[in-house]
Length: 608
Image (cartoon, rainbow, N blue to C red):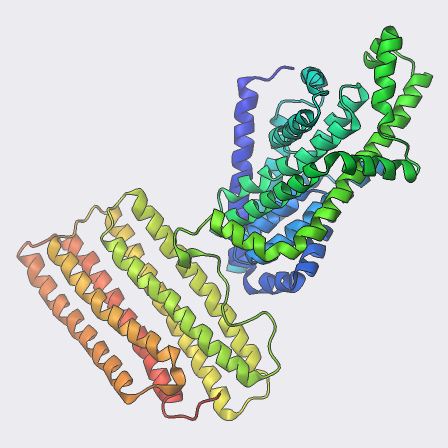
């Protein structure tokens, strides 16, 4: 086998293409799919059973558990699916992959998704030049999807061609008679082999070759197939590397599912293999243990015929060739039955432990920031309740949660002001701020859609006014998020122009942040009890807004004098005032929310 350094570089490039495709696909999903796909996926994964059926169906259709689990990871990364929903889909995908094994065993073919990749890119590229943002995002998703599968295909192409060089595994014959140690060794071989070649189907083929040569028994072949279940989890783990905490947890859940399944199977391994051998024989496919016995007997009784058998010098119609072919089919059926029964039993046990999986992976992979966990609405569910009035109460609670999440952005923006420029910490914090703004956009859309659907129900006139007011409030909160990100964008421009702030500027910016932060805190308090606001709360908010305007005016006037007196450069003064103006606009958005609360909720009869 010739494997050059160039082949290795091509393998690294293939992994890079795969990861890049995952990133572009996930970002395209976030921009294009939004609430529509999230609602579809919510319907498909409403409970653990529908989620399992979804996973099975997707994997059976595209004939690749790696591809389906990578798609699940991308959905979770995009915030379109929760961790609990993804677990059920992954459980189903593990059973769905047995469908592929049966198709190969019965018909000898498999769907080649990579054949559609280039035509798909051809369709997607024109969409990238569309003026419509949604159409452009769909194009990005399709390009990312294509790159992902192109990368998967090229990884398989550039790994060492182990399937065509089974002689590399001849040494394993020495470890085939060590009892339980042999089982564990061949389990590990199955894991490593599948991780390297990125294909459980290829591992299956290599296992069959090793059985045919009489190197391993049916039991050890089953151990390799069991190992391939764990090895195939490397693909979603690779995909999650470019994802968020939720994506990493999904990949870990997939690994955990297969690991725990392997543990119980190893505990009853010999009886379980015997049961599957009996089942294979019972359905008329023959005894899968017969191949090992026949080939080893042939090696002992007629070494010359054994050698001719594997150097392809026997004629096609030779009776030994015919016997071997029949027994190979028996082993193929036996391994497919073992794989199927194992996954079905594993699913029937593990489906009741979905919540356990979720809690376990959350402990194994904790979020660096609790608030950075996956995007999900807290009070609004996928389907509308029968009571439209009650829906308004839910939306009010969600609105307060939304305001709290956006409030965190104000703290991030202030921290970013004091973070060292051109540092890794600055880049990470800006990315986090940008991510929050993106989440803010999606929360606004989903809350607004919920309110619009609620408005279509039977509502009183007062409730209709409340819905209109809440739509206005949600829009203003989203504007606050935009303003917080605006501070980050100003800092980026400042960084590019190499302008420097002095201590006086930092102190003044902190003063402005303090006033805006107080106003934001008051606004959130009003939203948390929107039906029972007091005159004192409203007046305090209005006074704070006047203070913000006064501070802005004072700092603006002083800025001209400070520049003339050379306290700091003109360019620094420009960016300084941009930040102050941005914070003053934030105060305006906050007072707009307060105005709406005063006009539509204050001193009115509560809805509940």
